[in-house]
Image (cartoon, rainbow, N blue to C red; front, side, top):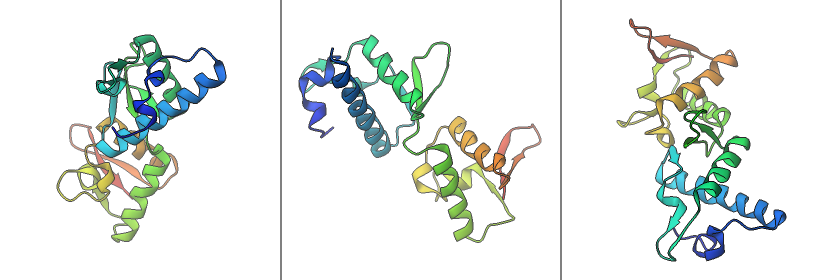
Length: 169
């Protein structure tokens, strides 16, 4: 990771001054979102390597990691994978609404309005419609698609077993 703040040793220690702490949280959010976007990392756990900088031999303490993850969730940049354990989050470097807009733009640009598109068509590894979504966790993809459903722009399509497999737009 080539971030000046990430290589600054005090970044890995919770700052006692509240104003400084809020700035530190904001920097952690930026570092995590940038790193996740660049590496297409959709999930982040409280034991993830991003919380350790071996180059400067620093690691964020577990209680501070928890505060960072909670801040991401409260700022709608993450969702808890399990709201009971709160040890792992899905990272939203774009909001579900922004992802939904990208899906609609792709559908419009390819003339697929009124068609059925599968989740694989949208985010699969083999020529995906929205390349940025490759590898997106299926739970996240379903949340994005629910945005389109709630907006009245799509309906979820299911297979014979009742599993969600795509959208009719």
